[in-house]
Length: 501
Image 1 (cartoon, rainbow, N blue to C red):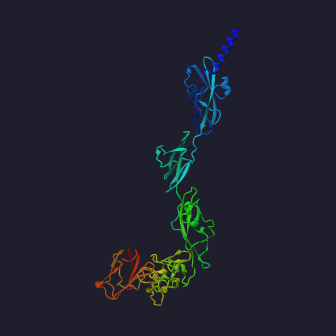
Image 2 (spheres, rainbow, N blue to C red; image 1 turned 90 degrees about the vertical axis):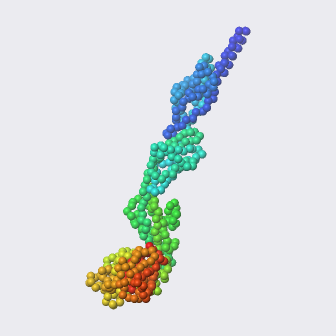
Image 3 (cartoon, one colour; image 1 turned 90 degrees about the horizontal axis):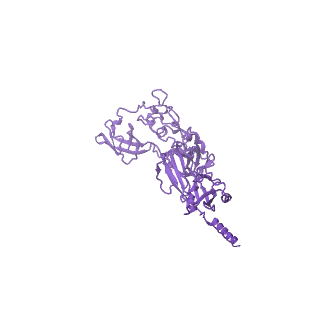
């Protein structure tokens, strides 16, 4: 009986030793970064866990093995063989079971470790961007700097210094750029190559034709088709979109565009319409043109509507008097006082004409930028048009002394009223001038001298009379005049162009 009791005690000691002779300590979980496949699988080195699991126990006395299930760990079957190069068999997160076996007794203990595959950051940028010539773009990831860190590089992988949090890079030149984004918690990183290409914006004329229509009911509002200028604006370019706006700021941010552009009622008169011309790459240019409701009445029946007789463009018809005869142009049928009615000066007498505002024909025979109907010397021959009435019948229209079917007032080579005392350009100096103008009047036969100075619109700006000229040299002070071209008329015997600087 004593022997049996001793045997039982020995067995009890043996069982206690088997269960408690070794310890499998809980190791730190393992985390690695996924590759750019984002599939949740990655390579783990499980052997790095052994020292933590043993935690000071002599590795020569124990075997550490790894399993994919608790059952296998308990039965010590199907142990993981490639422990230094293990690819998780479950995506993203997997529990691995660890068995610590004492070599001498075969007793064991188990614990677990969690494997996690962390995804690298997804960089929210396109592969290719278009940079419009002359502008800049922002490569903005939109990722919070509190979660990620950012590094930018040029095409040679040289770091680019970026102010602030670094989540956006301002680019003003084409090229290749790289960005590396790192998750501040997992330390997983992604690198992306970005190609920035340059595109030329559309090209439009800085001066787009105005759209002018007649006022039907004197309320200065009418319905306009804003698209009538599109062929002029596009000028042969393809793939362009035109949008219209009432405000100067709107086309730049592309908001509040006019939707009824082919049936638009003006809100002021005149009114500026702003346009945005954009190509398929998003590059755009901004321009503008005028829409205007005209008073199409012709009070003096001279062929020029009232609104076109506002020569100084100030909206007041009563202060436009080209020939200074106290009759405003819109009421004067001979605007330049040259004895040729304005309506006759709109007829192409010499095949030199051009279109103007689609409302009348403007003729400028001498190409001095003064239209004939406002120019009292239409051929720039120094003889006023009214003085080329050589047959003295009250109009120069029928004077053709060389019989070439062109009236003399339109031919510079015909100047019968200029005698040998005409001044030449060298007799008036300095020209251009910025203050004083001198005229040598040696060849002028009259003692009483009258000097008139006209601007390019035919408006009389100086009218002086001299009984005598001291030393035959006339001095005229022009310092008060604006810069531009003027015409000086001395005794109706000499007309010369002068320029005031």
